[in-house]
Length: 90
Image (cartoon, rainbow, N blue to C red; front, side, top):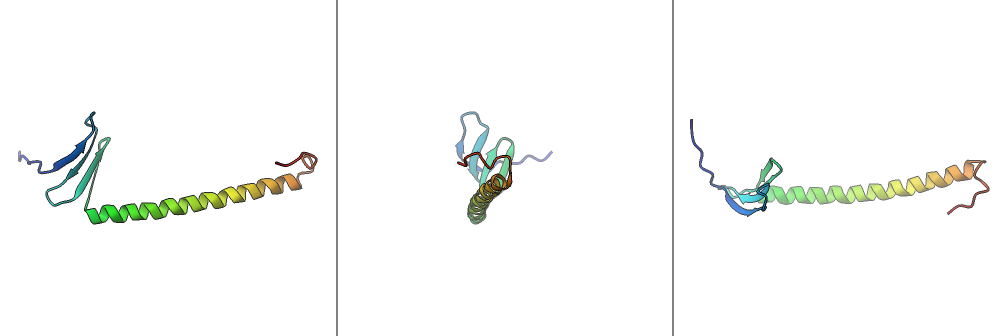
């Protein structure tokens, strides 16, 4: 059975030894978290974070539009519902 030498350089390891950040021999950065390991070049990590940021912003904008729409729908239901017309609105 062939033995492999671990050439990774650990940059940080949690006190519980569950998480770590390391650099590979080729210069890629790795994250180990709860049994899952991600290894990417620095360029790929940056692109992934930029994409995540665009997604986060788009999600926040979508939530804001949904919130406005929900408020509009709730107001419309109250306006159209003959049983609640006499109840003061917010």
